[in-house]
Image 1 (cartoon, one colour):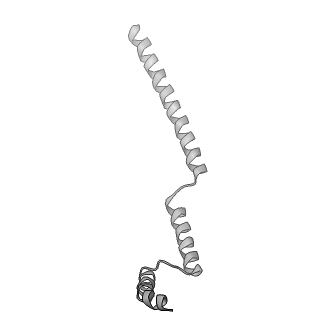
Image 2 (cartoon, helix red, strand yellow):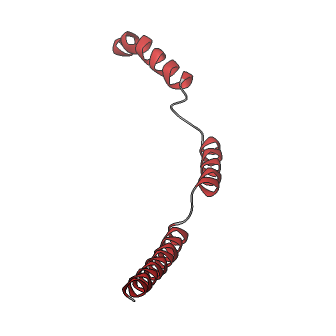
Image 3 (cartoon, one colour):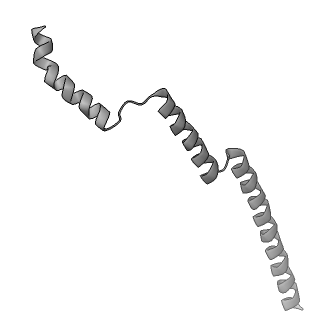
Length: 82
């Protein structure tokens, strides 16, 4: 009992710190934070599948543009030689 009384002020200060800075949360607060986090992620990020599909489409378009540029370059070289 003497040990408890000796450390009681530290325990009270620690509990006050935990309550003031909201170190511990209730399950309800945790569910609210989880739902708001999911909404934020849905609004600001794309899925991995969507990203990979768009990246693949972009690579295909760039490849076609590169091929078209090579075709134009070859035509200009042929016309310049005539």
